[in-house]
Image (cartoon, rainbow over all chains, first blue to last red):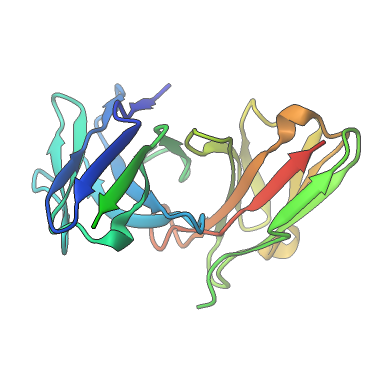
Length: 115
Length: 113
């Protein structure tokens, strides 16, 4: 079974600064997807960024980028130029390619962006 | 594209009662998922449909839980004889293919008193 671990229950960052959220996972699979989701207080889970394990290049979406270290089974999220609207719970998730879209989530990191 | 809709947003029920939640996926999405999220934890997979076929069920889905997706459209999740441990957020998601447009709804928060 896959496990996803987010070791930082809470983090805070000053507006406009950069913050990195950590995620590690455990799997014996070689092909899979990794995701970061954002869940604001309004509750809807929103996809932030996705990484395919077979791609060596780290995914980037505007201010959000990942550091994917496949051998170390590490998948961190970097948020640059943090904005107040980035305040939310962030979840790291893992999906096997043969697992019909079932995702395994970590327990989340609560990020607070301070003005 | 109206997103994934879930109804109701909140449900308070007495222990032992039955409850039913509804999820309306994005119209062209053939895959539909149910997850449960308890306070302070990440979502846990419950079950998955491809069109109208329920293809996988988690061991978390006890025999008090049943899910349907008639005609491959909306889905319902029913919990019979609710227990306090059933109190959680129930999330629905749909997708077009494995990861394409994987979209979550806002969830139904169940409180069992």
